[in-house]
Image 1 (cartoon, rainbow, N blue to C red):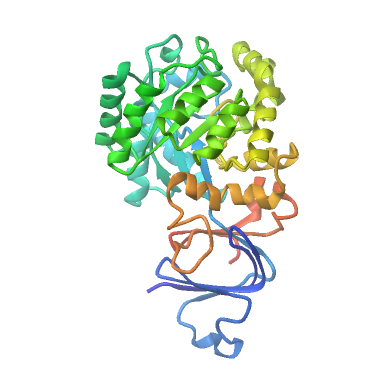
Image 2: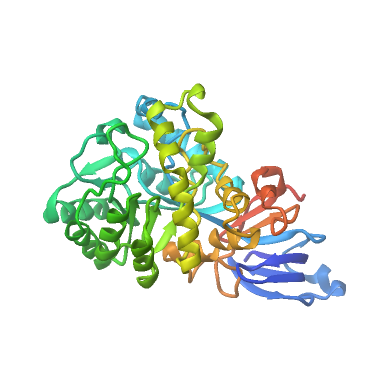
Length: 407
């Protein structure tokens, strides 16, 4: 039996703040939370477990990133990502997932990896070979036959027509994928992609959704253009990744159907900051400049309309390193889209709903898994404290302390 008592803590449970609070964890589960002492100070010596006096530090639910590519290394020239052998990329990805965990992200949703590397890394984490966050995997991304897919060799499974999408979905699920990722429009990060252009039609994507639903799996759609977003919503997807050129009709459709938006602002930050002189391909920088304002307008409209916004950093894109996942949160705040509290909620409670894990993680509640992080400073006032791993003084995943700078 494992028991942990945290006292004198500020606890943000995903919705509300508890002051001078105590938290009890037993056997990996949150047992109790209260603004009174759960164990009298006089009886602490008899407590069968570990006691931590947090002296006013803040406890948050473990953070969730709904959009990463764990086998991408943040290289400036993304074409070079193809050069390392799969076995090297797998080991590298496992190491970088440990870094992600140490940064306070206890759950990640991987939305596309070369040759199913994400499935191997997830297995290594689950078996305890390496430390890492809880990983949701999509395997290969389903894409129609199109120009540019060869730029990331092994990342896409090319499928066409209803039967193709049905078979492609079945194949990812057979291999162990937790969700399905579809390219509903062109992309920024390959030279042949036109971000606003729709690719599969709604009927094709619907075939993937139907197959995924048979196994209670969710479907994410990479979609920049308005038509691709609308096709995705009609098909029944659960999340729209990026949503750059969403028009009013697309946003209204998302809101009416409970479809989440995962905006991924962090790549824009790094590409704008670094530019072509850092080695980022000129076609990427040009596409970024052409879409940046549209993305921000669409995001604000989605927020105003009440679309649920789930945190996702697109970690692995140029200079957007695994472990720097909190940059997405600071961008949401710095650009004026959210307060620090709402940004954290987008990376906890809302993100857990987008992943279909709201009954297990995403908030600090009795009966949920003890995914917790302890922050030295106050992220509800200054979100940037999450960028420094030294401020993440403790990380607990499933009730196990995997990082502890307090003792």
